[in-house]
Length: 163
Image (cartoon, rainbow, N blue to C red):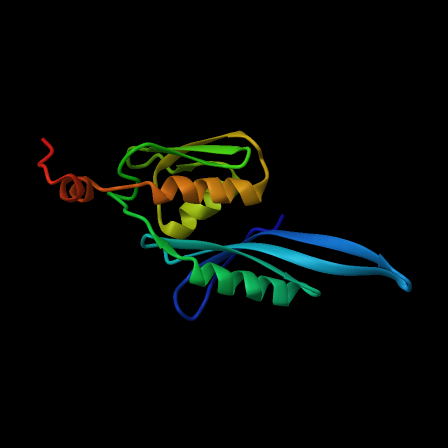
């Protein structure tokens, strides 16, 4: 697993999480192909992930970055953490995200940590259950993050004033 943090010309943070190699046995030997999993964020509440496949590593990473830029979602942040506790699921992965007090830091495994760092969260408590596959953990994390709502959003959607 690779832990590369890069900042591109647009100010986006991109992190290569996983590079997988696949071998196809052909007449002349083995033909390798590569798949890359990349998380991209601006550090201010936007984050996306991408998965790219190609015959070489650099094109697969480029395809994954392009897909991640297309799939960016906006996350509400409150004082460097999330507004409320939330859980997300994808396949066998189950991720629990809880807001934390300032100074706590990011308490998370590698896959969930990379998403939290890319989105710009400074303080959060997380727990992942069942699967430890980085691909499904990232998808479960995105499921959880997409459920986040601020207090103002809830008041506006319900048409009531929360005390």
